[in-house]
Length: 427
Image (cartoon, rainbow, N blue to C red; front, side, top):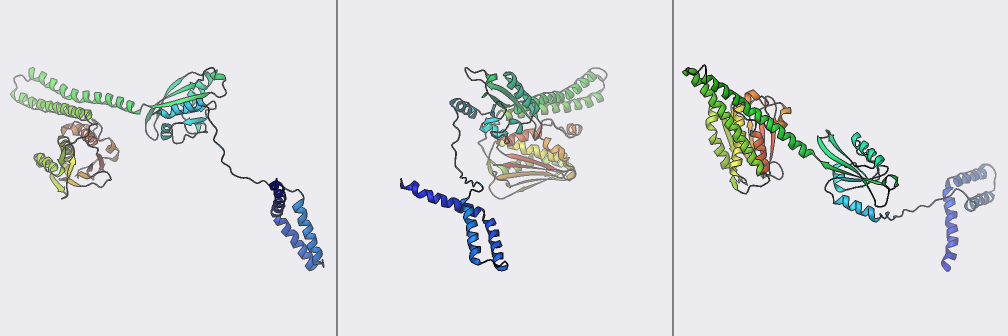
């Protein structure tokens, strides 16, 4: 019982001191007035001191402005009911992005996948603060009004082209009318369709390009056969000329089919990492020797530079041979104007890789906008020139898939008049 009695005077004293402190500026001014009266107004110092103490006592005793003392305290987080806990736990278990919204379209909960895909999403904010797609907003409004499930497909082009399937569903509770429930909630789930769309586009482009590439030589063969069976049946010179052209077209079809089969085999085993051991220096020497005849015909010198350190790597020898053969073959074909091609093996300049193989030609080069598409199937900058050089448009696509299978990386750099540089990084 002693503590309350002792604390009461202390509390009053603290209040008085707080009031005096709060009015310190005013009291200082009053003190200055009394000092001036003592110096210039012939006021006795004792009277001035008593007057000032009376005023200060009045400030301490009389009620003044309310003084509010605040203290920061950690408040307990609101405890969610069992239904909310179950919904949020289910949302967190999903691999796809999932958002839970209240009746005002405010985000109540977002799982980890949603935060990764939509970093701007924040609990407690309306979904329109972070996702402003008109179709999505309209779908949410529609479901909020009629309580039916809506499914839409969103196509975004910025910052990259993506497709998503979004399902907006009312979260119904047993025994409650969802439309009249003040605590009603929506669930928004997002499923990526980007890979499916790209595979579908790739498949259709592949079929269209492959059929086109095969149709042209087949049409030529049929035309020459009809000519040999008709007007040129007894013309030995024409027959010899046409048979040579037909052989070239047949070789082109054969090369195209071989490349298609090779690409198919590589894609089939792309997820399986090779286990063989390869000496890259010896492999590059072998590739160079195999293309010496072609290089001499094109009047191109192949300059091979190898570092003296270890050059062993894990990989599939036949596939890596195909990689460097394709790259060197392209350099000879399309960079012949430079008179020489450089091939080098050195320690990798990129973290996570051990070896770097570089193929440089000094030909005409290509425009920068073409570089990202060079590894696409059947992509050609100049289709006629490529066909004359017996190109199928699949070489760099094959190279890219083989490098990916070996867990490597490939970069291509080129500018008009500066040739082309291809770097292959291998672990």
